[in-house]
Length: 44
Image 1 (tube, rainbow, N blue to C red):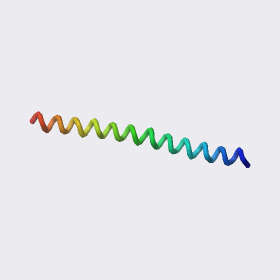
Image 2 (image 1 turned 90 degrees about the vertical axis):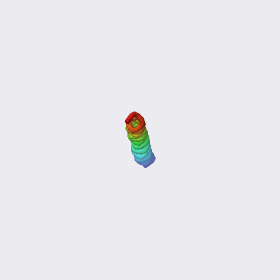
Image 3 (image 1 turned 180 degrees about the horizontal axis):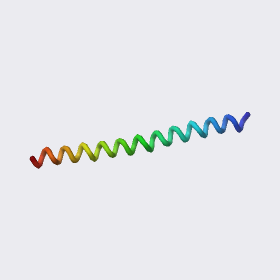
Image 4 (image 1 turned 90 degrees about the horizontal axis):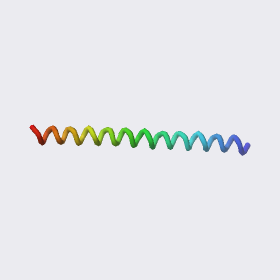
């Protein structure tokens, strides 16, 4: 029973850590896009 509970926590931990990693990647990607747009607007 304890092993099953541990697996549940492991899966939850994996899901959360993957969510954080993906979220950070998306955030930095959009930040770069936003900065590029700002630079283009300034150059025009």
